[in-house]
Image (cartoon, rainbow, N blue to C red):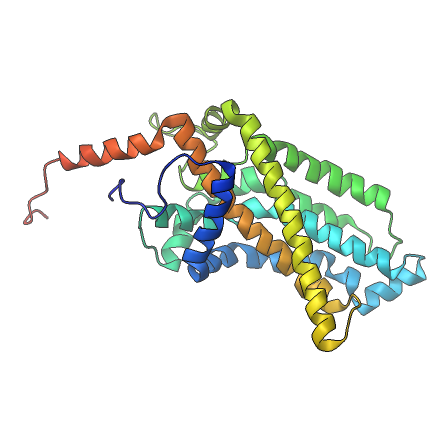
Length: 310
């Protein structure tokens, strides 16, 4: 591996440059990046449809009206729950895309099978940290306790799901957003098994705490842009639907396809932006671009292995 030959130029950038670079990376790797992203997302898409899809079925909407819950309330309930589900699940769902970006940065090509195996080696740590501690799996599990035949009680559902699971995940991710990259790319584990290996908690603290304010500000900008992107995608669909088909009202297609699709699209943007912020943080904290050049020069002085050696 040549550490001085990278597809993404390793240099310090401003937040505006990182946002611009995010679009360039998405355009350059397009279908391959989308494929890696879908490997992690599809299971959660199916899970979310099962957890909250019943709210916008014909039977679910009819039952809601029988217990004094309006159709509008149920559609808003479904949309809010979808937003929170994707927010909680995204770090875990995006680890395949993160692994892909980490490999192509150094011009390493992996087959889909090799990519899955590469991520699977860190799957236990990812599930424990991103799924349990950061509520990527625990949060959605709270929806299993909803009573489908009862009236909507937002004060209970919002407190349990939004403020407990969503609020906890937001607080953790604002100041330590790079755990997916540390787990998948740096291969850090919860338990230190080797003297040369850095424990996950120690590595995350060292890398992120000194720049916690900058990390938090970038995450806020990302969330604002995601909100704008989500609203823009949904309104664009409504406009096109009205112009071409004369249907300006909200309909089941938006509940089942457009809103979830828009959420995962802006989630993909967030995953790439977070990865680039991770590279920038390593450059600021560790002088990573200098380290890569030194490792390349050191490799040139290593004696070449004889061709006939087995």
